[in-house]
Amino acid sequence: MGGSGTTRRKVWAGALLLLGIFVGTALFAVPTANAIAPETFARGPESKNPQELLVLADNLKTSEHDQFVRLLDELGHDTSHMTDQQLAYLRYLVAWQVAYSGDYEHAEPLLKALMNQSGNNDLRFRATATLINILGISGHYEEAFSILNQALDDAPQISDKTARFQVFTEAAQLLTEAGQYNLAVNYGHQIIADFPQGRNACAGYYVMLHAQFESDGLKAAAQEFQRGIDVCLQASEGLIADSIRRDVAHYDIQNHHADAAAALLQGSYANVLGYQYPDLTTEYNALLAQAYWDKGDPARAEQYAQYALKSAVKGEFNEPLSLTYKVLYQIAAQKGDLRNALAYHEQYMATDKRQLDETEAKVLAYQLVKQQMDAKKAELAELNKQNEILQLQQALDHKAVVTGRLYIALLLTVLASIGFWLFRLKRSQLRFMRLARRDGLTDIFNRQHFVDEAEQSLRYVAKSSRNASLVLIDLDHFKAVNDTYGHEVGDQVLRRAVAICQHYLHSSDVFGRLGGEEFGILLPECDQERARECAETLRAAIHAEPAGESNDIAISASFGIASTVHHGYELRQLLLAADEALYRAKRDGRNRVVVNASRTSDDVSSPTEPSLYGIRNTTHCADPTH
Ligand SMILES: Nc1nc2c(ncn2[C@@H]2O[C@H](COP(=O)(O)OP(=O)(O)OP(=O)(O)O)[C@@H](O)[C@H]2O)c(=O)[nH]1
Image (cartoon, rainbow, N blue to C red):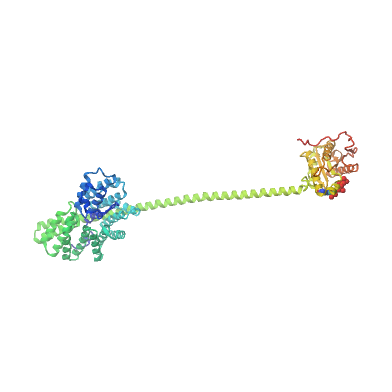
């Protein structure tokens, strides 16, 4: 046959099922056919583990097809001992056999059921691969490409190299059918990379070399074809090796080496018949017919052409059939048998057209599915982008919330620090204020603060014209205490005297140390008499409680009183008047209370003399028990 452009676009579709036959061997991790001794089968299947027999059958599918069919029969007789998975395995092998026999119509639902129902992923994948295969053969290209694309998408997630192998072989096969030779060659290379030797390597070589043959004649070097054949023979895959030989012979015919082609085909012919594989048998017959025609042996050419018509699967319109009709037409024409020549020519043209249509349909289906997939991928990419944007937006929002919270936390920390700092500032201010206002020894008001507080108090009582009295206190002979007992004891005496006074005073009374052993008390809302009573109480209390560590130091104090009723609300005036009274108390013998009532008359009371008012030792200050 010639290498015209039209012929070039045709594909030897018979190779399709070859892949379906081949893929997925030894998927289950159990001994392979080679590992199981021949006597295993010789002893009879009934004595074997069903799993072993299933794997044995699986591995004998192509190499020992008759044994495989017998084993399937035996296994099918009694399935009562099989697990669900083993039953599914058996169903797969049966479906495969149905497909192998060319009954694609029945094989398809069996495989689809396995794809949808099997709990075993590997088996599902195998069923998918075989289904793709027969969908391609039976002309359902769009569905085949669609399922293939899905399987190719899933393939990277499949770690099992054997399972991947299934998909890649189907991919290479279908892509060759659709004219995507480079892609097909790539998948072939991937298979060989995964499996440099053995049955899978054989399939890898086959799909790669077949794609190269279909694309460009024999682009690959002759050694590569020989290598493929050798690998297949080493793996006991004669059928695949002979399929590669078919391509080599086909190439020889195209390049006018009919003798070499016939010799090559004849060398394998007996084996090919033994495979009982209609497509390959038809291909061999058709190529032999062409080779003998080219060699000038029309009788043998006609003989093989007739064989080809017989072996061809009914209803298929493939290139070998087209080639066969062409040879028959040429033979009839040479014989002058114009009627037959015309009939064969019509058949040739019809088959050729159908073949071309099929090829076009595959190319179109591939393009269609590719476009659909591209559109779906673009849609997915768009969705993913949107999703990414959404996630970024959410991450951004989350970041903003976190940042906001951080700012708030920072702000609160700053505010808390400022608050704490202000609090400490205020506290130290208060401490300094207190230090500035208090007398260090007795902790009562110092002179300056006493003056401020007393003036304020006087202003207050002056507003309502109420009375207030100022009492000055001076400890008697305090120098003698210091001189006799020491300065420290003197300090104790001072503190003791202050404590006694505080004991009797109100919180509203202003009490301060005016200097040395002199103290002042402003009694607001207290008239002269009540002030005297209060002073008397204090005098008596101081005198009654000896001081010192052993309470053996007798103390006394002198008191001078001036009241607003006689001296007005000026503190300075009151101080002068009270001081005058105090001076008189000292002069008159100390340990006494003197009231400066100079506007009327001075009024003095002492422990020895009753006061003018006859009141003595009467407490008019606060009741210390309250
Ligand atoms: N221990 C002590 N003594 C002080 C303090 N301030 C002043 N003095 C002493 O108080 C004494 C006051 O003595 P004077 O002014 O002579 O008065 P006095 O001895 O009390 O005599 P009269 O007031 O006349 O009864 C002095 O010896 C001061 O040194 C002080 O804070 N602590």
